[in-house]
Length: 117
Length: 109
Image 1 (cartoon, rainbow over the protein chains, first blue to last red):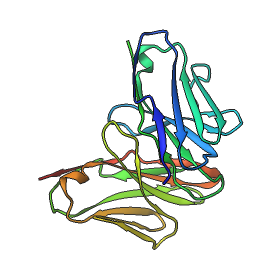
Image 2 (image 1 turned 90 degrees about the horizontal axis):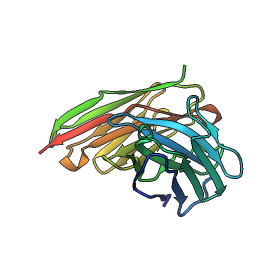
Image 3 (image 1 turned 60 degrees about the vertical axis):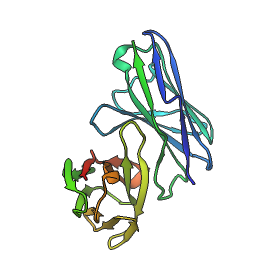
């Protein structure tokens, strides 16, 4: 149980392109989804928290206009990297969590490797 | 300040050599402590949840324990396939999650 699917797993694109990453909870309803960025040999860096039907909450230093997050349903959240540049190249991971107020773990997708040329 | 600290940063073991990974935390209102395993190029895989001091969970060669200040992940007779980075996360008040920086485990055959 608690499967989270993330697509695509790998993206290579030219500078200036916008890239959309999808995160789906397959067998549960995710009241909250998180988006992380992970640099090589480092731990997870939280970018934003999104609750279904409301605006995402971004961490300090994360550009809202650069990283657009939409959480339109209880099973889908998307992260769009707008006008991507080489410095946006990274490993992006989503997680889903069900039950606001409950003591449940986050369940993670397998990540998206984004390479901007 | 709420924080989670994992030690050691890296650990090399021979196959069969048991050891423990540490996760110490200072958070207000602990709601749960979670252990994950992360393989290179993959997202973290959930292993255990611990809720209160004294609680223990086991899965194959792994056993997680919890006190009021720290958690241990004990690895008994590890195999090379146990090599991975192990992450600890704590859920505190207001549904805030704090992640440790991980322990990279390398088990040599």
